[in-house]
Image 1 (tube, rainbow, N blue to C red):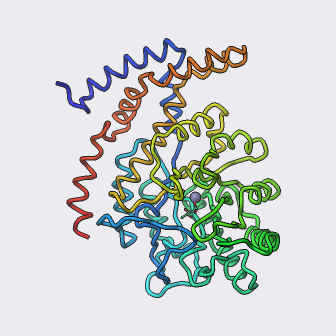
Image 2: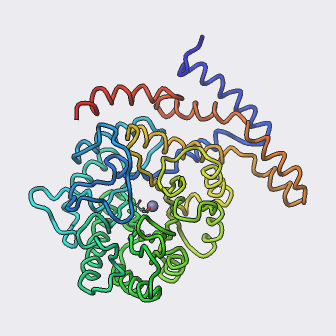
Image 3: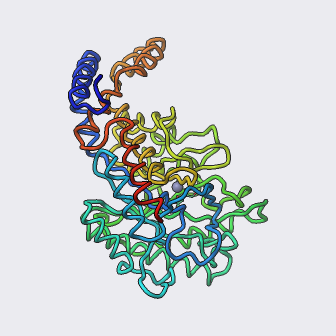
Length: 424
Ligand code: RNT
Ligand code: ZN
């Protein structure tokens, strides 16, 4: 019996799959070449439960909650980098790392967030260069004494607002330096927790203050070859159920009028509302988009990404609309109840698999059926396409990319758990 990763078996299955797709008018070689050019930005915070390395307060706060106590959490920058390297070695393609400001390495005494500079990220930049990774970046507006009452850039106290404005300004300099040093623009995404648990008396004031604060953060024009600014909306958080200052409508308007990237997080809307339907709408008005691909489950917006209908729909929209060069794909989930390195691998491999499925879809046939008004054929074909042999194409892509085929990546993770994680 042939092994799962027997190259001859994988290649034979691929040859048959390639013929099958060719019969539908799809060139799998073209699809794989395109797939290899799409980077996914892995979020550093899956590796250590959003802790970072400068926790001053007990709770992460900001309405973020990480549940689970699986052993082996990364506790130092080197451990986190080792874990990321392990994850990346099991994921086909070239990708990026998305860092939060709270992962600074000040060395010696802590540096206040409004005084952070590129020098505090030297370790990350050097490592990223060695690994051939681009870096993306986020100011950290939570897990801090000045964010304890759930308000930051929209805070009524001008002193607190000013502190957070300075943090945003400092982070833009850091991101721009990362972009310049690594030769690839760093997407800097602003997400703030600001909101109220219960009905506010004034919904407008905080939004006006947020507008002014953001304008101050973004005041200095920076080279788009080094940095792209993004803003991320949210419907509600834990402890901000009644009102979130930075809502979708707020940030859509802000991004359009200020020429910023909008960040759509898949877990930040009503449970039946999906971002796959929003992409083609916002791309009419925006130059570029940032995605936080995630999976909402009931109250939680951040479960590990799996190959759901919605993930496939997101990937289909990116391909069908020809948006891949205008959309930055980032991941955003955190699960402390399973092996954290495996969580990265599962989520990222699923994202890439969904993109592959979208790239080998015989979309012309669907669109022809639709434009000729044959909606019966459209539905029939959509269902037929669900069982085309993309699994064989995916295995072949993994083989050719030098990463484990099918479930075999899990063996590496189990070994890493015994050799490294269990000893922490
Ligand atoms: C929170 C946002 C945000 C965070 C990270 C840690 O709801 O999704 O993107 O997950 O900044
Ligand atoms: Zn997010």
